[in-house]
Image 1 (spheres, rainbow, N blue to C red):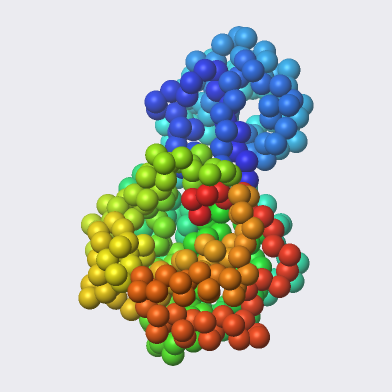
Image 2 (image 1 turned 30 degrees about the horizontal axis):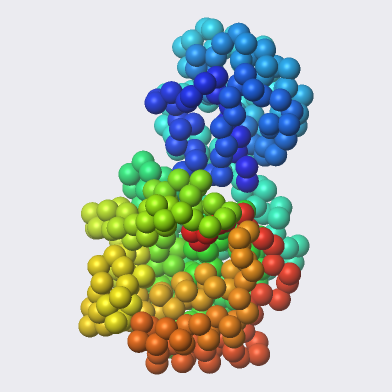
Length: 370
């Protein structure tokens, strides 16, 4: 989903549009530079009318025809007669009061995004998988709001998402889930969804009780919550990350700790999966260099599923590794991973009926950070 932000000059500090790049792939276009070409890839347009000049409005109106075929939301002060007059002259757009809660704007954009997400799904997605997909996407969007705005975590939605996904895995298998999540436009979201599905399937394979299976699914959905404090310009960068960008990315478990540690409603096990999934048993991981004695079975499982998902996903900057190649890479990691658990993971993944991806994969727009 490409959100095009239009403003006459830099966005003001109090504009809610400044926060949208944390939630959606977004690009800022200067109002005076608007042409049909600069907005050609827009799927949703958000226009900030604060301090708009006559020249900016003239350029915007001249390019209004290509904008009129996509949803347009104008940010205004509903007490400002000038801004109301300006938006009335444009016509054909939704209004959002700049001073209203950000969550309302996000909900409206998210509704538009979800319409397109579901439209991109394969036509034969089973009902249970479709419901789990919708609910999990709503959860991830709410987690982003939690990360950026310090809003409450919707614990009930998290529990329902994990329960729905476990039911989908049991009824429809993993293949249907992976086919759905690979159509997602966001590599970051697609990765979290894939990890949650693989983790749930692996926990079932290990014979863990239902509540533990649900817990690791929830852990998979939450494990990269720290990335939601990182701008999408870095997360979804299509090419190689710079050293500074990689340093920022590697701080996501620390950001996850900042977000989750004060949340008493989230279990310690889920917090550990989010904070410790890049720790290795030999103490060489990050952020805290923990060794095997301090890494729980749930975290060991999450690390395996996270690495496998990252290796086998398709991204704009790389081809996916076949399952056997990914397994080989993980086996070469030796003491970094729980090799007994990895052996059982191999037994699951290399079974003939294990569905990694049977359809041609759709390339998510996610980048080097996923």
